[in-house]
Length: 311
Image 1 (cartoon, rainbow, N blue to C red):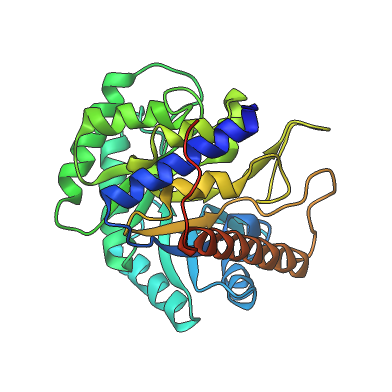
Image 2: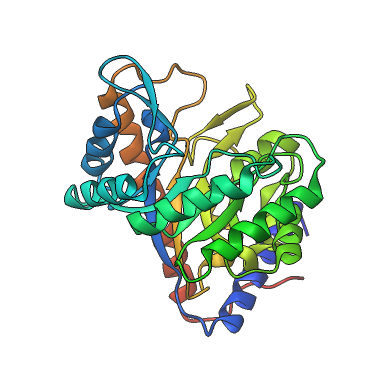
């Protein structure tokens, strides 16, 4: 069996296992766009562009160049929960449901637990379920990570908010690494946000077999692709070397609600848009690509007949 056939067979086996574990209920995917690709533009323009690109879900992050030319956080760490509540209401008035935000503090830092407490309060006020957390790009400080996450998880209890860890090198290089953190924290408020682009970029590690080993801990995706050829560069989904059909297949039947938040929507090799309308175009393309992948996988899984398994 060739390597690509083996990978597909393994992914299919993972999907079958997911169906058995969760009764075969389809995953309710929330295709979202982060405001992050709109960093050169005001937050208000980002929200308008994301809505016009056909999204119904949005993720906040991280900074935006406002009309006065100054960079400001999408949500300041020290902002009162009422500020987050107001921004959440503004998003909903524009037809966008906020589903995710960044913590902006590495979880090895001494003040991480307190920072996460603030973010949890903001997210609860805004009606956001997921806060993206990650650490430094180098290993070390593992006991601090576990302590900070456990402390934050205690504060999250009963809030409806969870911390989702995404790959960022170091202690969070792969999904397998994050699964170990999830197991060591052992709290229902701490899960994984899978970032396949960072797995391929930071470690040059194939995300397909990696997600097959950790899909049970995944509760969200940070959608980003990556190319190693002809340049080493992150890019939008479908522009890189990651097969999103194989990536998403294991989580098609979890019965969960799961955001797919587009973090990078850009084309490789060419300059990024200098006007917001160019970013709108790429945001729409990313949404349509993911919708096509999910529709194809859903049809594949719904068709009668046996599916391929491991040889």
